[in-house]
Image (cartoon, rainbow, N blue to C red; front, side, top):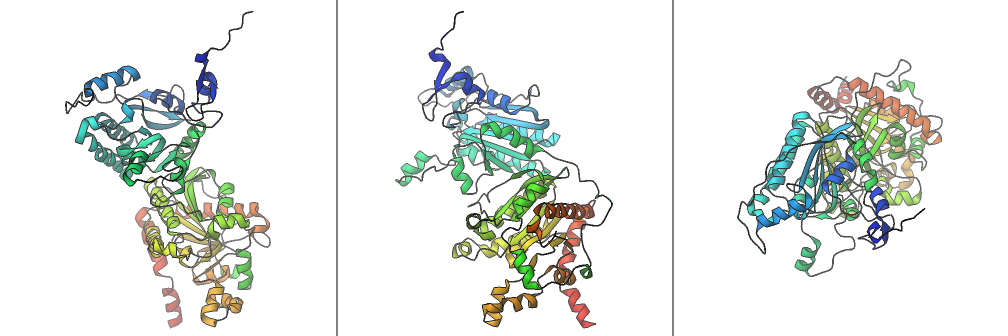
Length: 555
């Protein structure tokens, strides 16, 4: 038997680490180097095949691009450059438009190809993106954009620049209609594409190492005359600065997309049996308020992410405020509660000292509240309920938070929650500390776990200010009436969720089951309500807080 030795054409050098990789293995890895993880550029046809279910693709014709609207010539005539790009790629322009399915979920898919004149945005691409948005709007199908571009096409002058406005308008129409948009950022994505449709999507997922920005790093470095930070404009850098929702390897993109595209019918009514919510204060035992504070702060008490992973299916965490950062003290994302897509947002403390420090002990910065607000607006656009889990000693009190507008961020979050046109349920799962808690607590149904506390200030803070003695915290806790029984009696919460044993930390699984039942019951109560009904009842609920107590005192 004759064995054929591999030839040099069977191997390729990784563009990232220069290691030799067997070509077939490289192809099976979707163009990702098995040695260093470098994600090589992929053509539009190959990328489309990677994302869509086999056999589901239906090509959508693009408009015929103008041959040379400016009769532009640099070192070569533009018309000649176009002919060469079409000949080498087999494409009419730098965009491939298709419909199809991703794990059975329908999408309109636009894929840019960097090998066609650097994936530059010209009139043909702009019209193609606009037509894709029209198709998504007409069929109410999510629009997925895979970007790879050096920017606007200079050879088409002002006409290419104005495509940024055209594509932005097209995505705005999908915002008004409540159609989901997802951007998959690949390397590189710069200029007019980054400053229009690539960053206007509801969810932005980037491949590892993908670079994105308005001005390229070389231009920035030359203009400023200084070196740029390590990893500047890479996906990982952008994630840390709150500009993208996630960074995922190419092998996971289909699964990520399928999870984001998944919908669901409203949850069925709760089964017959004992109500998972306690509404009568008499049904709760009297408890020392300071004891409740200790349980609410227990380091083993379940966190938002602990509950989310037990209660929701297919949770996908989203990151960033799209302005300045990604506060780790607030987490949020979409998942499925009994088959119904919901947006969950909550404070996150962690358990170990290292986790708590990394999460800022659950004390959010303005970036966190603005991230929460972004996710709330996305939920409103998609028409899905918002669930918030409250567990914070309060908003972060540092000077940098004040410099970035802590008070404004909290106020805007409170106002936004009061106006959301979708069902909202808030649960105080641990500490509900001051305005930092209320920023996530303006809901149609406000619940609390039976060992949770909710107060205008911490007992220690109250004792230090009014008693002028921090050692009086126990007395302050009692005076503040911050435990679940008193909260229910005063109408600050609508119902209490019983905890197992001596507290949720003693049996997290049972606590999660109780929370699941409570969320299910609360959403069932809100089912069928119109947005106007939700808004009016929510307004009345908070308008009556305190007013009812005043009337009772007058009698």
